[in-house]
View 1: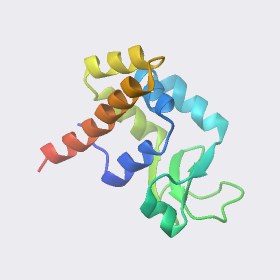
View 2: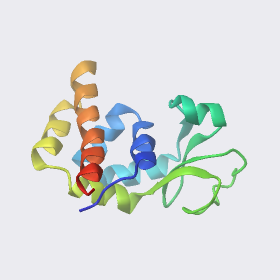
View 3: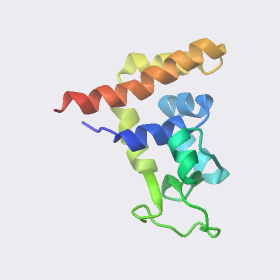
View 4: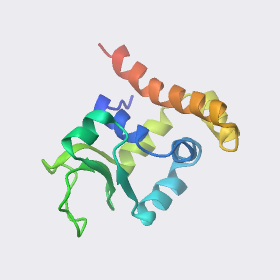
Length: 135
């Protein structure tokens, strides 16, 4: 069973809702799409914003990291990252989602904002519930 840490769950929550639904639907395609887009962004999470980290896309995955890595050379375990997740970890997380939840993500990719947010919350909560179930 693959679980995400709290920091990794929060990091996934930094993505746009449509990206989270797309990852749940077809991770092999969307991991590559997000990776190739080399996007980043200001943290939505207030605690991360307060410490000055932002979302950065790397060839190996995503990270909430400090500024200064202009050539995108940091590795996954760099101490500058507040959180990091690899594309493989995302794919394994999706593989362990219930099929009905993945199907709902697929259906809601073009849904209204409330329906989309509800499914995204379920996807992210599932990783949290899995983690809690291990203890």
